[in-house]
Length: 131
Image (tube, rainbow, N blue to C red; front, side, top):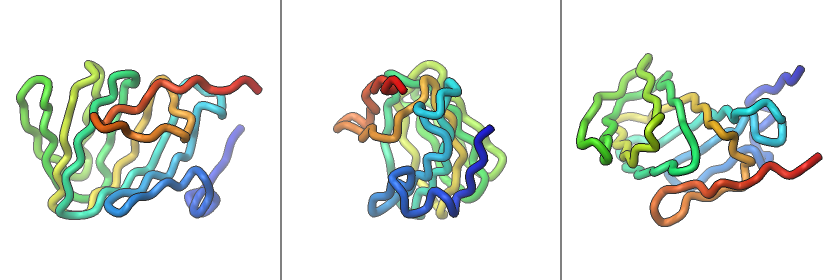
């Protein structure tokens, strides 16, 4: 059994932040459970483009409002608390925030926590090291 709090993660290598966003990586590939689980916060009035070519991501918005642009299928969705979106087709997408947004995200395959978005918003597929 694994039990962690966000307080346990804050300030560690599982707490990754840049100027406009922060990701607390609660469960990572090294935990060996087949997925990773993150709490991600994106600041108000910002735009972020992503394309997870190597991962399926499910996102549940728990706070805030914004717009999701499915750039692969040319569709637009309003985002508000209680909205879930699943990138099961590896869709290129853009998130524009109206207010600060807090999301709970699941990745499969799991990320290791060492990935960095490349110039296209893609996380590389990084193998989980053997124990």
